[in-house]
Amino acid sequence: MSYLISLLLSGVVGIAYALPRVTPPAPPLVALVGLLGMLAGEKAVHWARADTASGRSIGSGRAATEHEAAAERPGGAAHGG
Image (tube, rainbow, N blue to C red; front, side, top):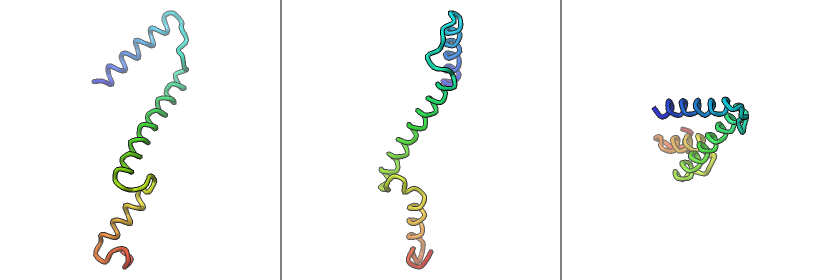
């Protein structure tokens, strides 16, 4: 429902800019790229916090998980799997 409200209000703002022929502060493509960058930054912070909270270093990602999984298997990582 919030997406619908956001879409409707942005349409109203678009009409409000178009009626008096006011140019928006940023072209639509620039605004969309900016929003995409904000989303990416938000996700990066969330990922970094989750990664450091789990005790892994940032960027250790899947390799550390696979190593931990191999160490938990019978025989452990020392026996090659």
